[in-house]
Length: 68
Image 1 (cartoon, helix red, strand yellow):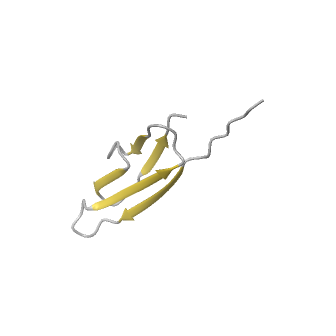
Image 2: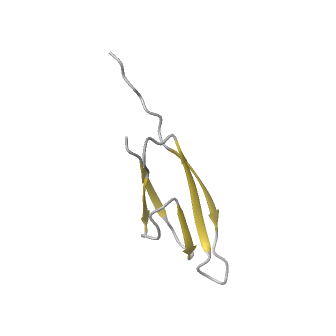
Image 3: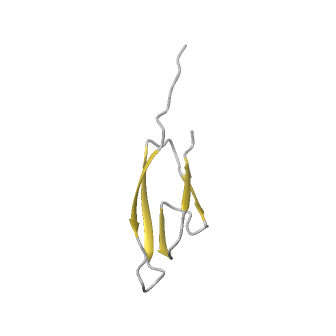
């Protein structure tokens, strides 16, 4: 018997907070240990890639899935 165990996705994020001017925050992520293509689902829906720009102050969630 052979069991192939895939490593878990790992993600780092670089966050630039919005300043008083507004709408200039950003989040850039880097995902490792992925198999195949990645799908990025942000809440709220601010992007469909690993980066979100033009952000205002507030909370953001990111769900990342690979092809495994």
